[in-house]
Image (tube, rainbow over all chains, first blue to last red):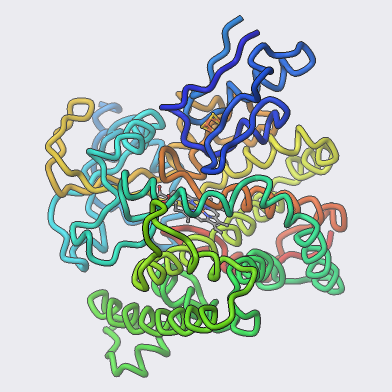
Length: 65
Length: 432
Ligand code: HEM
Ligand code: SF4
């Protein structure tokens, strides 16, 4: 599973960080990003990453399997 | 025929649309459902528009998808008043790109980490207030908890002196709740009317066109208060948001002007003081009325993941905010033509009950996924304080139900509700 955040869509409200803080962090302005190295999602975090994708209000999280 | 009748009912509902009273709340969800089915983009009469001297039509969106589309398109649907750039509320009444610049300043003080750091204090303060409230067998949850809890936290965060809290609440209630069914707000406005020599109409109400005087008089007092606070902090900075705001730089280029500082503080005050209190009051009212849902919540609240989803669902179900925007260019929206200066409003409580987006929208489903609700808004203006709000709601609800899993509405005191940015101004409960 591969995950990324489409920067143009992200509005920086941190739902992703709330759901899966190990994979999603946010920068100084509050915009979300995927922790470098975790774009290829470890199996034990896959459920949380999927939930973040579903919950992101701006649909800015994209998963490719 | 039946179909025709529904349409006529919808047309009447649109003509009579007035969400700013407590009576409205008795049938709000039925009316929004009727409009969503028959007139999802409804031309409405809207109180307040003529008072402000606004021109143009008024529209009401009740579908989730339409609301999302509107709130994302800030070029067409502006948050700025037609008087812009004269003294806008920052950041709420400003469009990108200036909005983005202001949010950049503010976002970093409201991040999840910054708000998590406050949690121990939230836990402690919530506990103290609840213990005190629960010494009694019957109590007003709003007066004893829902109002003071977020308000005191907000004052601490911003650096408003705690002893000013009663005065700040009074100003807030006069500005926001003078004519929406809020008992205290109405009493304050009536007192102010007398002070200003405003004559009441035949029904004993303050005439609509004179309310503006009361608001501007109160607003002026508040601005003077903010001005003095800014001056004090310039002399002696503290670890609070007022001091950080004074040091902040717009686009890294210049400090904020005195006007910008005042207009930001004012908006924070309007957005942060009342909202959590309103949501909490309505959520606990829901739990008093739906004991099975309350028990379900109590059973899940020790599971942090389920609790997180449950809080989102409670915010969806109890959305409180109406979101108006101003049309900046002629545009066709799903076949309806909007004109420049039209006002379009999407009530988050309507979008959040759209069955196209939320299955069984009128039921609380704690582990609802997906739940991209609009309780905190949508798009660039999405709530700045949502990480704080979520924590306050979570901590308040868990601590309350640990201490008191069973309660009921007090049989002798009806809950007092207010419309507009809706909420409960009094909620008497008793231990079951
Ligand atoms: C349950 C509680 C809350 C709810 C339901 C709520 C809801 C909302 C909504 C729907 C908006 C969007 C307004 C718009 O699009 O015009 C908003 C914006 C805002 N909220 Fe909240 N809010 C809550 C708590 C708070 C708190 C605690 C604070 C601050 C301490 C806060 C500060 C703000 C600010 C500053 C904005 C303007 C953001 C902007 O325009 O960029 N809110 N809120
Ligand atoms: S939840 Fe979506 S919009 Fe919010 S910060 Fe994460 S990616 Fe951005």
